[in-house]
Structure formats: structure tokens, C-alpha cells
Image (tube, rainbow, N blue to C red; front, side):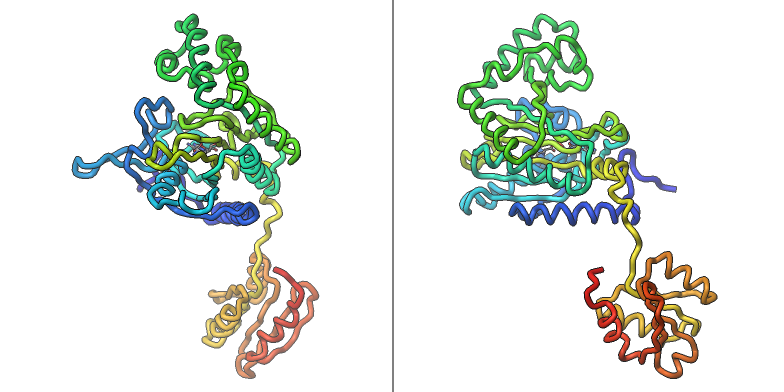
Length: 423
Ligand code: HAM
């Protein structure tokens, strides 16, 4: 018997419903903030994701890369931003009115060690705001994500924010980190010893070394910011204050991807169910990605939410508890499968009433129980008698009233009874 591949999972129908609920709310938020969904291919040329001298774990260790017939190197997308920017440049979206505000709900693939909340195939809900560098946009992007998860019903979340500064700030900071960590080289893990030479920023978010005293006491970015970058960050924080979004400044937040510049942020769960995979979503600004992809010098900012992680937390916080099954009508068929009963059910469906019908030779009592389990608003009872008279017995499960109705008047009767109901 085949099983799913390690790190991949089926989304069973009862869980799919939760994904749909989350997606519906996310799409509503995209409308509120003016973002449009687009799709990019599941695989791209490897160069879309990986740049020379890349130091992120995602690019150096976790990509599913393959080539067909020894030709081009292709990669299953490990994240959404690079593909969106590739498309932005390829389709010359920069000639539209800026900023261009794009969103995606897509599967991503990373060869990580699987555990709860960390999968090899997972779903991201993401947005990218491409075109302008303006602290108001940074705050607005964070607001979209923050108020979305708040509205979903999450309580135990925290916004962490930092700045990586502009190129000048980062250069000075990296030099300072290099000089500092050189003294502690022996204490660092094998990967961080390499990072020290290539990109010492990466040491700050190393999963192995992050508890070391020398990492905690490392020089802070804030002391190396140019005046311009410091003022930009201050402005972002001012906007967050105005939007009443609580945040913590985390000096060691550098994020796991190499393309970030200036503002970076994460929303983390403080609930025990999230364990070590507590980052619900993360994002930041990228000044150079569009240019590196062959486009003009245009900045962007975005985030991506890990939908599976979000759902684990939402379940623990009871977000889905209110869900009750519901259908407009349940057809109780005592005619042992007559075409008459099937036609009545189909007519209801064609008039936009969600309808279930009993398929089995069962007692009226057991069919009533089934209609309860399905959450039927109305029950349509059809026996031999009704069939001969071309009628049905309609029962309103809320008022408990019963009506004998001609089959061709059933829809009108339901329209009347349901007037003003929004389910
Ligand atoms: P990221 O931090 O690599 O950023 O991923 C974003 C979110 O995806 C994480 O916070 C986490 O919730 C989820 N995630 C990542 N890896 C896994 C995994 N193996 N299993 C389950 N969930 C996972 C990005 O991908 C950037 N593209 C975000 C961004 C958009 N930055 C700017 N624009």
C-alpha cells in the first residue's frame, strides 16, 4: 500500500473546509487592501530562486532541483516572491501604475526535516507590493497580515520587527559582525563558521547557535544605520503606532532569505501548540530583487503566511469550533428511490437550494437522524401518497410547522419561508 511521501500530507475534506474558510477571509482582505491574485508555475529555472553567493538555508540546502534530459536546471518553487518578481519583470508590469499589488495562494516545496508545522509541501498565502519605497506601504502591508489573522480570531500572536538598513548600513554592520564573531569562531557551528566569511548576518538567526551568549551580545544593527535608514524605520514604527498594531523590536531578526533590505518582520505565535514552528508569517522589503531579475530599479515589500501553521494555531484557539454542518433541504425518500424524489432534489439544487437526498432503504426515523446530522434547514418528505398526488410534505425544522405543497410550488414556498434569512 502506498503512503504519502515523507513531509507531505493529504488535506482531508474536513480540513479542506478550514483551508477554504481561511482562503475566503484572506481574499476578502485582499479586496479590502486592493491586491489581485495571480499564479506562477510550480517550477521555474533554478536561477529564479538562487543567486550567486546565496547563503540562505532555503537556497543552499532545501530546494527540489532537477533537470530533464540533462538540460536546464529546474526547481520546484520554495517560496512565492521570486516567481512573482520574475513575472513582474517578464510581463513588464512596471509600466503599469505603481505600486502593483499582487497576491498568491500556492503550494511551496522545501526539503526540510519534517515536524509539526514544518512540511516539505506547504501552502503560502502571500502578498507583494511592488513599485514604491515608502514607510506607509511597509506599515500597510504589515497591517493587512496582522488584521487578517486577528479577524480570523487569533489571539496569541506577536509582531516582531527589525530593519536591515540600506546597502551602506548593512556593509558597515556586516564588517562589525565579522570582526566581532572572528573572536568566537571556535564556538560557532560548522555552518556559521562558513557564514562568517560569506554573510555574518545569517549567524544571528542560526537555529543551532541562536542561544549562544556571543550571538545574543553581538553588535546591533541599529548602531550602524545610516541616518536615512534610521529615519525610514522610525517612520514605519510611527505608522504602526497610529494603526494600533503592537510590536516588539527584535534586533536579531534577520529573516532566512538573502534578498531583504530595510524593514523585516515576523508574526509569531505565543501559543504552546505552535512549539518550535512558531513563525506564522514573515516578510520584508527587497530593494534589489526586481533589478536582479532584469527589471528596473524598483523596490517591493511583501509577506507570506504558512497556511498549515496558521490552521494549527487557529484550531487550538477554537476558531473553527463554531462550524455547524448545514444544508437548505434534506429529501426524506420513503418511495425507495423513485425518479420523482430524485427530480425534486435536483429541481431544488437548480434553484440554488443546497440539497441532500437519502439513497438507502431506511426507516423514516433514521432518515430524520441523517437530516439532523447534515444540519438540514428544511426536510422534504416524499412517500407513495405524496408521489401519487404530485406533492411533498415540507417541514420547517426551526418552527416545526409542516405544509403539504404541490411539487411545482415547492421552490416558491421555500423562497417565501426563507425570506430574510442569509444562510
Ligand atoms: P519564509 O519566512 O521563508 O518567507 O516563509 C514564510 C512562512 O511560510 C513562514 O513564516 C512559515 O509560516 C511558512 N513556512 C516556511 N517553511 C515552511 C515549511 N517547511 N512548512 C510549513 N510552513 C512553512 C518567504 O517565503 C518569503 N517569500 C516571504 C516574503 C514575501 N517576503 C517578502 N515577500
